[in-house]
Length: 419
Ligand code: GAL
Image (cartoon, rainbow, N blue to C red; front, side, top):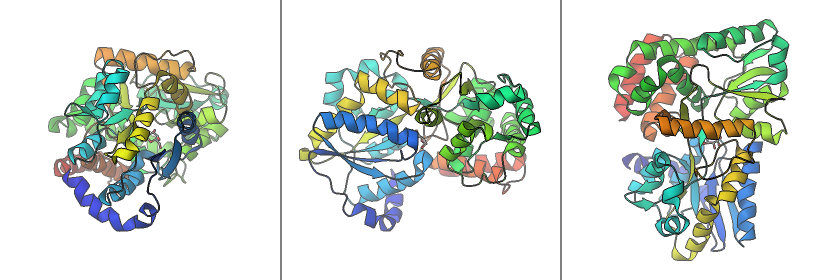
């Protein structure tokens, strides 16, 4: 809560222009989000259309920037100005922060009527419900430990599914030898950290991931296994093209779609780009779990955090929440977005092979206790800790931290500081 209040003050000046003119009408939903790529915008259209059918207009507040850091800065400014959107896209601990700050609305009545308690899995309820009140509507479940591979390039180099980290390196070597960019990476802190989530799970296994990345156990954070995780991250660097710094995630996905690169390590929002480009899994591209992470799922879930809007805007908010968690929307939206439903009772009929796998993997991991929050994506720890993590990982990738030893030291210090 303190973090939010402090940041609110800082962000205020920067976004005054955006806030002005953003006042909302009663018959419209004002939504802040960072869904500006082709696949993301297509998914959001599903919602706009559903609401239009109910007679509600759409006031878009898009703030570009994958991972949502820029959007969250803009949101702070709006909230500080008392100008609440009907809802905002949010990730995990951020929802809880705003709820603790007392600015969220209460959707419990809608939730009861619609039976959310029974259909939304417990790990999501932990973030959508604050002190017994529903404050957010979960839209989806994404997972980050995926590889997205161009099938034609894979065939050309005679590659097969890598099952271990070493096999992954061998595959990247094959691409390099064939003159293809092996690894499409966007050199932005959140993308690098999202990839590192998978590397930590692959290097240390499920128990280690949980200890380090969700429990923030200091002995795990400073262990040799964490050092080895940084070593593995370093091993991937030679396979990235020289222009990777600052590249947007969807441009990295486009490199794979076009066959300019073999593979991207990214959350399954990348699949939304393949869908938008009319590409088929199995024929045009392949989705594999990050090598060595089969059986575990590192997840994040986009939530629509519901603000405490004035009474005359409440009906629009209830309509939004009801539409968001309807079974038909959960299927239609997530088919386009690349994610899987945030309810457990949505049939997988309309999903492609990667989506079906995503749904099955999520269910199995939830039952087995191998479903873990993504630290890079707001589900491992509160935002201050996640930011500290992203900062250390990106410094390591961009050679501002030179050794794995130093990276581990800085990670422990930064996380301790942020806690
Ligand atoms: C994630 C979000 C996804 C996707 C991605 C890239 O944080 O959960 O829905 O939008 O950012 O923008």
